[in-house]
Amino acid sequence: MPELPEVETIRLGLQKYLVGHKIQDVDVRLKRIISGETKNITGAIIISVERFGKGLVINLDNGYSLAIHVKMTGQLIYRGVNAPKIIHLSTSKVGEDVPNKWTHVIFSLDSPRGEAGKSSTLFYNDLRQFGWIKILKTEDVQSLPFFKGLGPEPFKDLTPEVFESIIKAGNILIKVLLLDQKRIGGVGNIYANDALFNAGIDPRRKTKSLRDSEIKKLYSALLGVLKKGLETGGASELRFVNVLGEDGGYQKHFRIYGRGGKPCLICKTEVKKMFLGGRGTYFCEKCQR
Ligand SMILES: [Zn+2]
Image (cartoon, rainbow, N blue to C red; front, side, top):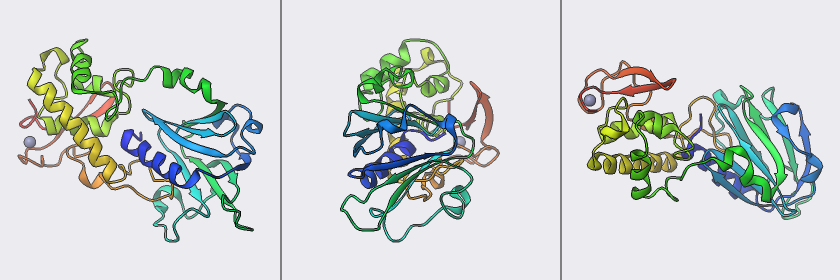
């Protein structure tokens, strides 16, 4: 599932290309993806795009917003006047063109600078169809269960002190804690695996067993891998692409995620794979203690 770096990559693209556009029409091809009244957003101008954990919020000038979660395979793809001329479309993840059979909602947009005859479009594609779009009043966004329960976020409220207190508050597996959106917002499986590897901590450790020095190391490692994810435009796993439909690059920098059976990047020992909390967990028995 797209995590903080991937969803932030989507947000940056939406912010860059959508702001200023007016929503002219909404074509809903699969009803269960979207809830709320589309008439409340038609005619409204997009003013900003925010991210909370793995969730996105597109704010409009009429007091309404679109809350979006792409879940496993959702894609938001922009085509129009603000897009660059050359796009390196990921045909393996998007298909040959948009719209296609995975396109479930189409937002028709006006031309922000009034170019005659030039239309723009935002497509919502979703292969597995677990994603959602909710139309609601901007003031109600924060009371959606998803947004309400989010833990503090890396690069925002998650200071080293807050991180330490979250770790020390219970006694569960450290890997499971990192993935719990109610404890920390935005971290998912890829970056949790890589952060634990970079910090030299065995994902099977209980949180109470972590020394203060290890907690500090893990904090820096977590921010480090998330930063690398952001810089490389996210990891193109499953169907993740940016808003132009292009691949990210973090998959070329995986530290241990997805490397089961391959040699550890540090000591060459075979990387082990197991499931913790139902999620694929990769670790090196020699480098992670
Ligand atoms: Zn190793």
